[in-house]
Amino acid sequence: MRCLVALACFLAAFSTIAQARPWGLSTLILYDISGPAADESPSRHGPTNPALFSQIIGTWQDKRCGMDINSIRLSSSGGRLTGQFTAHPVRGDVRSCSITLGEPTQLQLVNPGFDGKVLWFFLDNKGDKPEIRLLLSGKTLMFENEKGSPNPILYRKIE
Image (cartoon, rainbow, N blue to C red):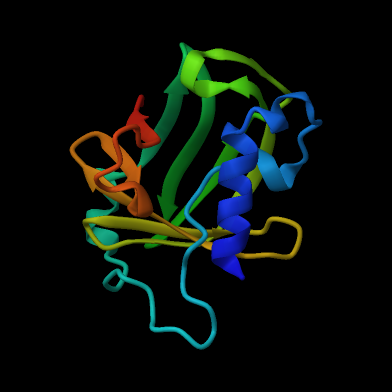
């Protein structure tokens, strides 16, 4: 079921049919929701390591077409990672940069963790709580499911 939701979000975001359609929260956020269902194997990351949080603390920006599309703001307190995800609904075709942005939506990260290579968290998106996994490479975070993709969504550290 999660993969079908991910596919629907992806197709809605990049299809020409979706260009004239009003966007709701379910279609504005592009992220990996292919995390394990209850009957699948556990996540592909190690245990969280607070000693490594300094590598990811700050703001990470998804900037495309010269616009700030999404951001992830991370902080830590008492050995716990906390944060917020901000997303703008996108109308138009991102590939040709013919887009406009709607008002941002902010969601708190639920149970975030970091093992030195993978940042993971959940977002409470209308009851569905998919696990999001991003791979760290220098000052870039990339969705785990887009590794090897010709045009991955990248988050770059800005502060």
